Length: 152
Image (cartoon, rainbow, N blue to C red; front, side, top):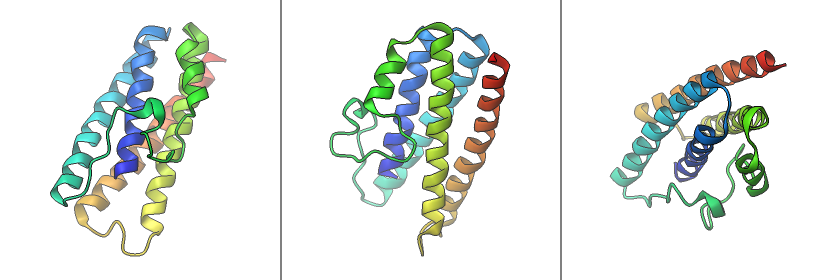
């Protein structure tokens, strides 16, 4: 959960960049939906950790990749984030889409790892949460791949 908070926070940061650097209005609307769902999920994960007496990872310290929090699957490197932050217009849109697809695939890996760990993901609320993330990320990957094809 701590790593997933960190992972989701980077997606929110990517959408923050989209607001001022992107060109496509349909992509901006899509990005806003990502921010809403990821932010809601961050709140859920923090509450889940707090209820269990577990430490809550800082959600917005991803400039240093969480200062001690390891990179989670699919996260953009500092170099990729810097390149994204420098891009504008259609170049940004392309980098955003390919980066967010990479990011979402990483979330699918984390869900798969959870379910492959004996005894993990057994709690009904956690199972539903992880399954929802899996379904949402898969659907959004399909949408983003479609947006990439439209651009070509």
